Length: 216
Image (cartoon, rainbow, N blue to C red):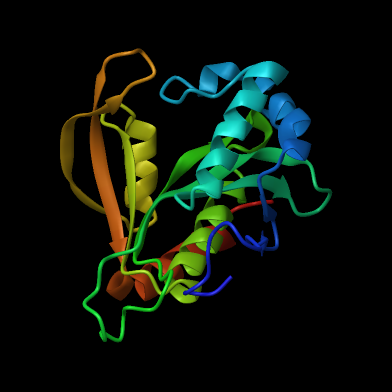
């Protein structure tokens, strides 16, 4: 898929030294169930399904968003043996209404997106998996799609996630009040972070340095 491609056709496999991001499918359900069951206490701020039936609903919903062209979900696999570690996705994919004749007005162009729905099983926490997955996804957004912006939102109470986003070089933009429904069924205040195209080269170098300090 290139910058003018449709997210529903030939979604990419993003491969690194530690992880491989495969387009999410029903074939990943069993592996996702096993990963999520390793330590459900990790998911205080995220609604991660437990059990096959709930996970299948989760995957089907993600695939419906991909069919609509608004999301591109992945299963995160360990590169060495293909074990499913978790999941992540591009979503809220934006195609801006550029004026006719503008050089940026290519059909299907992707101008911005969010990265989220990211989770890993206990075995992959504090390994290279999340760092390399972010590197692969951001590289795809900025270098294949030529996007202008990638953003992230996290529950304002989720200090670990906020610190992780700051660590990779994402810029804190502020708090969106009553932004989304939280896992505890209350209106959630979301901390918003973003990376712009101009910032990407520096963020790439930062991620590569972080990745060099992580084990597989």
